[in-house]
Structures are given as structure tokens and as C-alpha cells.
Length: 308
Image (cartoon, rainbow, N blue to C red; front, side, top):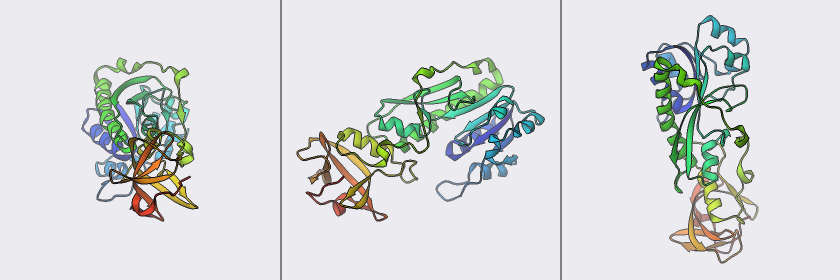
């Protein structure tokens, strides 16, 4: 098959290498330049150029006129992995075999953005990654394959995202094999759209501010869902206020000890951590950010203070 690849981030880089090693012909790559540093290495666009592939801006996928280029170059398939540009209907329809997207969540339950964070926030016991056919409605096309995995009470947004990459790459491998041998397998199954939940770009639980009158488990899940350290969180760090000062809470745990003060009240140390009362148990605060500095909770929170 002749493939057009739209990719970004680590998952996109791994997929690019798989495509380069496959029996298919990679006719072009849609990706924007990304910064290079010692931790991340080259971005998809830079790596594709080094491999000798044609690289075009990712936003072309939004342009109806781009469909002409696809037809002229006899491209069969679009594969999208973590590229955030939304393909227009004309572009989707230009591929004879189809356009396919790797989504880091189970569909239709977690359509839209930041599915790993929402799954941690909702304290799901399992999550999944899905390869689906693209259509005009985002994340609503037929499911080609999916792969589920468990979520633990210590998982964060980052660790679940990493698992999505690991399981997602196995789906990409299967997809490339089926393109060669069993294209009928790509028919997929329709989604039960009555069960669909769609999460928007700027949608964040509690508007990003910790609600101490919720349970300790809910508060801890929100903090873990927001944790992408050492990378930037799509939600930012959950915030609270001490008097009029904004404090960011970056790491917590549930104490399993009933709280004996009003929600938001700072208590004594428990297991070496500063405790804050929720509606049911003490929440143990490991780390905070204050005035741009990461500090231990003990350095900022005093017993008897009230967070709100």
C-alpha cells in the first residue's frame, strides 16, 4: 500500500520507524518541526527528513484542496498517530482504503482529548487504546482493533499515556500486517454512539481547583491524573489557595485515616507528609509549587491553616 503518515510525539516517532521497516511505501509525512533536546531526541519531521521522506505541514490535512495531491500521488491509506490536526471530509474521502487514527482511550467512552487523564480521574480499573477508521465526526468511526490494560491506584496521566503508546504500537504492527495480507480485517465494528462521551481541549475537572469537600480518593485521583512530570501536563497542576496565595499541589496520597477537621484544614504530619482534611479522610501532600518553586508541603503548609 501507499501510505501517508500524520504523526507527532513519541508514538509518532516509533510509528515512523515501523513504517520505514515495513513492506509498504511511505509516500509522505505530515508533521511540524519539533524542538530537539537530550531527553526527547529528534521530532517526527526531522527524523522523516533524515530518512529521505517528503515532509509537509500537518495543517494540510485540514485543507480540502489537499485531496488533489493525495489522488495525484496514488495514496491508498492515511495513518494518524497523535497528530492533533483534524482531517477535513474531502481529505478523508480521498483515500481508497481509508483513513485511520490511533486513539489513546476506549471508544466511545473516552472520545476527544486527554483520555488517559480522564480515566485516572474517574478511577477506572481499566483503560484501552483504539485504532479506528476516521470519519467527519471526531473519534466516531468503526473500531478496527483495541487493546485493554489495567490501571492501578498509583498510575498517573503520564504512566497511562505511556501504556497507551506501548499497546498502541502493537496495534499499528497488526494494522500494517493486515494491510498486506487481510485488508478485509479493516472493516471494523461500529461504535455504540449512545454511550459516547466527548472531552474538549479546555475541559478540566473542577476548573483546575481542588475541592476539599470531596473524598480523599477523588482529590488524589485528580492530582495523579494531572501529573505528567517531568513533562508539561495538559491540565496543569491542580491549584488551591492559602489565604490569597495560589498553591499548586503536585503529588498526594490517600492516608486511609478519617479526617477530624473541616475540609481544607491543614493537620499534623502523617507518615512524614503534611495532612489536609477532605470530606472523609486526610489527604497527604508530598509536594507543592509556590511562586514558581517546587517545595515540600511542610515548607509551605502550617498546621491549622485552611485551604480553599
